[in-house]
Length: 463
Image (spheres, rainbow, N blue to C red):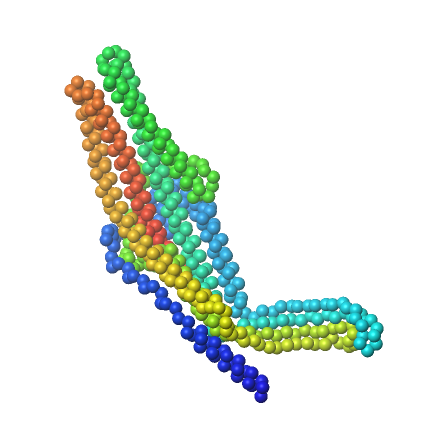
């Protein structure tokens, strides 16, 4: 009868604890905004984005650099290590849902005084036994923790895919920028050689008294101004090579070149689809979704921790002593325990609210990732359209300035204009040539940004 009363009291206490835990409420997660209905500057029908989209530039050197980076980049290797860690944590958490079995053993050697004889006794006692324990997942706490670990593994895997896309885009952009700087440096060196010839001519004319000291000083100043551009571009190229070397996972060294900038083919524009499709095309968005799932599961586990827990234990073994005669004595035990939290100064409730706050952070982080993705696609498409128009205007300006230089040179030779007029025309044409090449490189890089913004052909793989 007393045993029934004890069980009834325990059940009542557990029910009261569960009722108190049910009173803990958390605020609902922040609401998510609906995606826009359409893009503002969406191009026409385009090709589907492939995972090896960088091959569309038709430059073997570029393809080789990207593939080398995807194999040796340190950020990717770090991401792979994070995936391995998350997988191990999932295995460890899943193992907690299974019973545990341990082997324990103890042995003692003692000298004591017999109570009946008053003589010393030597005894050896050994007790090997198997111990088993199992926590009954009454409220799904262990299952929720396993779900959270599984979602964290998915977040790590999609995070690694996001790093892969970023590395490929960074290498492609860096290489295209490097080829644009190479082309600008070639123009600067050709222009410097032309300025050197002009300076020599001005020196001979001055020495023969045909021109004034002013024209010689102007030619010298123009030569020095152009000479300053060459080391500036050479330094920019060196820094770009060093940055690419880091992306390739190796020490700074020269970068292999392929096709010149003028021969690099711009790939066809990818199909942007509708904005809602972007939510399934980018690995960083999938990573945000997995982080929300992990935080939801962690919140469920924190709430379940407020409820009573049931643990079953058992052991079986033997007891052998030199003071006993005969076979060892078999010993065993079976039992269970209920642990119901009563007072912990609000620690468990605070844990629930902390988990809810982390859930809200995951939702808001996901919303920011989505908005950033929309903005990146819009920016990339706008850049493609406007840079193309700007480059066309720059090419036409370059042609007009080339004609202006020809006319200024003829006027100067015929004595109708000063040398300053020809110098202005030379300076303007040089700047226009550099600008046109920079815009050409920027236009190619803008397509890289669009491929990256659209997910780079990423698809959720079976995990």
